[in-house]
Image 1 (tube, rainbow, N blue to C red):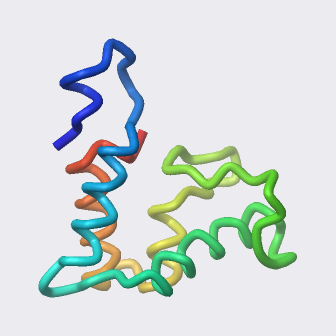
Image 2 (image 1 turned 90 degrees about the vertical axis):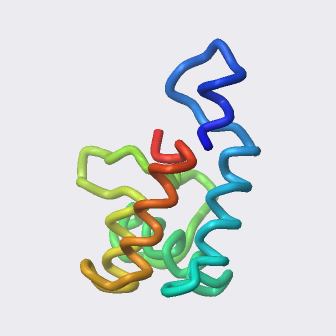
Length: 103
């Protein structure tokens, strides 16, 4: 868990190994698995929010866990896609925190 915090001198970042743990955890969650189409829907939702609803990512968006000035971030997009109290939203947020990709 949080490999980067234990092996790299730069604090507040996540490495590929952390993201691998996150993606594996959300897809293998026994009560609320998040499949690739679900994950894609979350990221597309964040891009749509950043583009004012114009649709999809244009390549200039920063899809991130950090909240931008408009209150947009990946966990909020997950809540919009799945529902705020839906088990997949909870799984998404918990795995993000556990693996340190929320930074």
